[in-house]
Length: 149
Ligand code: FES
Image 1 (cartoon, rainbow, N blue to C red):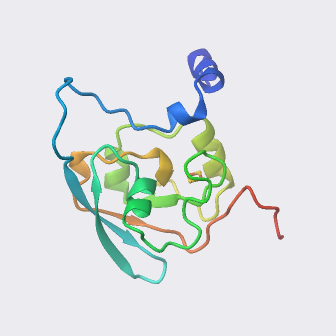
Image 2: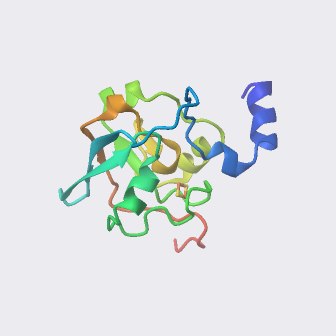
Image 3: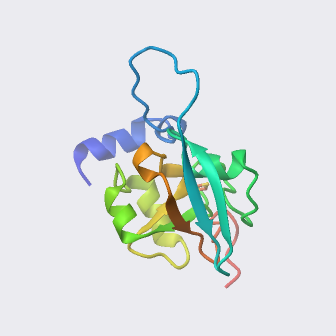
């Protein structure tokens, strides 16, 4: 971990890091661009929905009242890993940022992690993600709860 990363990790409040970076030209937009997203549950059930560009996947689930058991338990404060999503390799490769810091720590403790796993509360929607399909693991691990094993 670089010196800058270590400093940022300890000095930038969690809530600030949990926001999607949106760059604007100062002119307010009347409506947000929306993209289509499909969540695929472990049993193959597909949930098609829309999300605002700039929101993260957790907000899409919340705003659309999508029933994913236990999803987003810590509300994006990077303490649970229940927002674990698995991306297709080609989509993962196009994500604007790689996981770092606390997200990596949380992913290491999540269940059924893959090389293309991310936490939905840390990945923001971009226009190029329109039509994206993400898998929701069968088992989520709420790291805030005591282990039962
Ligand atoms: S919602 Fe808890 S880590 Fe993402």
